[in-house]
Length: 91
Image (tube, rainbow, N blue to C red; front, side):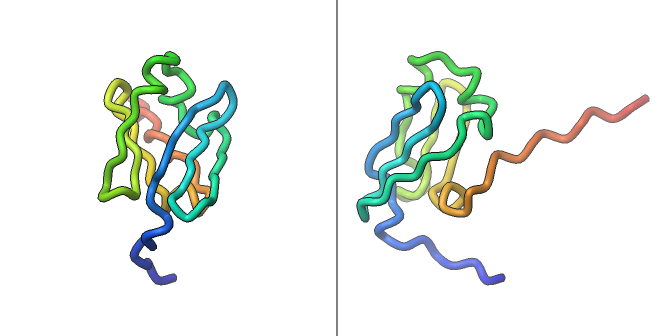
């Protein structure tokens, strides 16, 4: 599978996080909605933390500084949930 460069229309225009979903509007008019449960940091964040986001990654990413969470339009378009942290090693 080849990795392609993001297309200009896939850049972020607006973001909102509802009680159930992060919703991302792209410049090309598409709206992406994914389950909030896929992103544990956003799920646990306060309303204020969810509303405090910045466009990052040259326009193709979203960063929430208060919870140190980053999402890319590429992962949202793929429907890829956040990776889970590795389980702690057993003694």
